[in-house]
Amino acid sequence: GQVPWVINKHVLNAAQRCWDENISLGDIPSRTDFVLPPEPIRPDGDNKDYKSSDGEFRLYRESLTKYRRVYQKNMDLRSLRCSAILKLNQAQQFQNFERIYFPYNLDFRGRAYPVPPHLSNIGSDLCRGMLTFAESKPLGPRGLYWLKVHLANLAGNDKISFDERAAFTDDNMQNVLDCVNDPFGENRWWMTTDDPFQAMSVCHEIVAAIESGDPASFESSLPVHMDGSCNGLQHYAALGRDMVGGKAVNLCPSDKPQDVYSGVMHEVIRRVADEADRVLDFDDSNLDALSKNQKKMLAENRAAKLVNGLIDRGVVKRTVMTSVYGVTYIGAKKQIQEKIEEKLEGKGYDIDEMDNEIYAACGYLASLTMEVMGELFIGARQTMNWLATCARLISSQGQPVTWISPIGIPAVQPYRQKQPYTILTLLQTVVLVNNNDNLPIHKSRQASAFPPNYIHSLDSSHMLLTALEMEKRGLTFSAVHDSFWTHACDIDEMNDVLRSCFIDLYNKPLLEDLKKTWELQYPSLVFPELPEKGSLNLNEVKDASYFFQ
Image (spheres, rainbow, N blue to C red):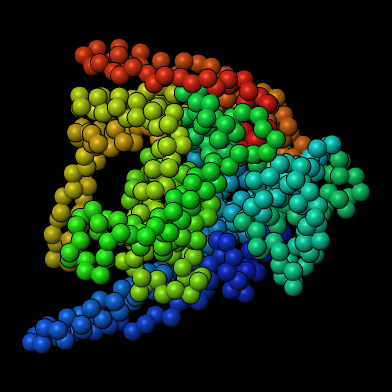
């Protein structure tokens, strides 16, 4: 909260122009609604012709589904427009301030969040692009290099070595110049990047540094990010000293970054292709004659045929990322369905007509992805199961799960059985929810939420320890959970700091201390033995170039 910021006027002006000219880009939504079909009229229910009536109702339901889907899309667009207007409006009001500060809150796990709800560095690409440090520092000998790496990351080229990323920016220097000199001209390369508004801000900084004639002396205020590689799995691997998991998430030295998402993707693609190519050894023309097992096999085969060829890194990424934070099967299916529908729409399919098939296929794909995750990250699964089992034992006593984070923050899970009360009035029905600490705990939520909450308390501890050390060294530091930011000239030093803090954190007997604390609190409970640790050497993190990247 003590880091001062200013508004990046280049990005603010570009974002405002996108809004004014109805250019849908990133967080700037379209200002034109989708064409809403007429609301279908429910057919007469007194029709005595059953077959005719059944057909009418089927068409009515299909038309109603399409109508509701488009209506919801328009409601979502209106919500996105409100959000964009609020962000742009706040940036305009602050654009001439010399310093802006964001006060922070810590949640019950110790995670830090800026208080302002619309414009802050924890926000979306638009928010981050419109903000830059108020204080500038000379780039020094390596600053321009890290700016180039940062641009490649924002363009989605983050699966290659740092040198290759810097070379990517050099190869696209004409695109970078066009972004700065004529962003809305014929060459709109910057708009095709993963994070267009942040990419624009980096383009301006790179061009200004080069055109200064002495990049090493150029005063740069742009924050450069170093992000954890699937950070939740990094913490699980460090807890259990999991060698296989540690290598997959870049805790070990390597010439190029390991990509856990691609590893899962390739295995899912292989299994889906095998299933799609499989020839069923039974007649599926009469579904009623099939056994339960045959129906399941048929459903999986049809699902595989539908999604075969549509799976890429983006389809599985969110499920892999959130798996260590306790994502459910329903949550995973929803994440995957959004991506699959995008791809099918892009191929010209009417997804409304295929609603049931898509739903079933995404359920199959979610199950398969979670199955592959469980097989690839056995160490993480064992630690997760141990944490959940202990939480289940504690909640069985009617007590919320509590622990002390490594930096001394007492954490208490707030999940209780809320009591809703319905009040009927002449005008409306109002539901009031009683939510206080005297209500009985929600046992299942206490157990299922504890593993991700405990990991969140560890990643927040790592971030705050890094922040304290950076402050001791007089360096600017900001962070969004597992994304650490500083000036380009200080990236190398920040990389050393965050690795040292991570090693110091996990050299402590965290799980052993946690178990001892619970045994003192609940002497009548018998907690399971800790999972066996692997052979990962934490000191290798010092030389793991892509631990944060």
